[in-house]
Length: 194
Image (cartoon, rainbow, N blue to C red; front, side, top):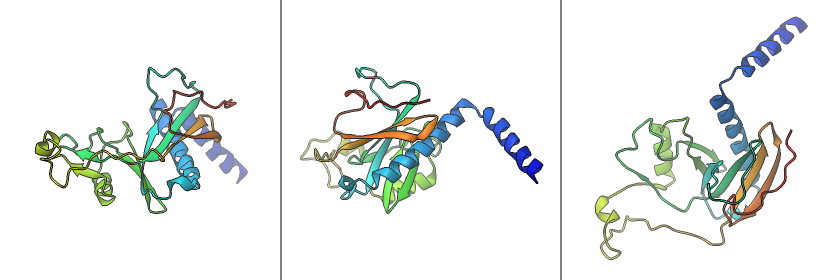
């Protein structure tokens, strides 16, 4: 029995050593997103919101503070804006968010270039009333000419972004920063990553 278990462990270790880098990165990101969401749900400021935009490693090239290669960054913010679905957003495309998790009745969605858009994702976006198809007449209309279904960009200065800094090799080692300053524009917390 010990030989069988040892053999299975060695096979798993051998196979994981040859996992393509893109798949390894996706697995790390998926786990980091799940940990961040579970932690974020404990944060009381998210209570009035039901949809949340998740961003992975999105830092402006102009930001003065860069993140080192050992760290992955997950930003979670209330989803204020509508996602406009157009004719280019076909099943398999990657322009609009392609991944999601629903926890405690709240939708967390993000763009993953390794996954194409699915029918399920489109249904979820419409179910949570954050997707809309663009009416070009509304898009170019003046304020007075717009129809009732045109959604204006909403913002809430009280709502802040939770930014999670994870060590890629030890996702249990992370720090959370709650702020309204974009990632990369403030000094990131120090993490001792191996």
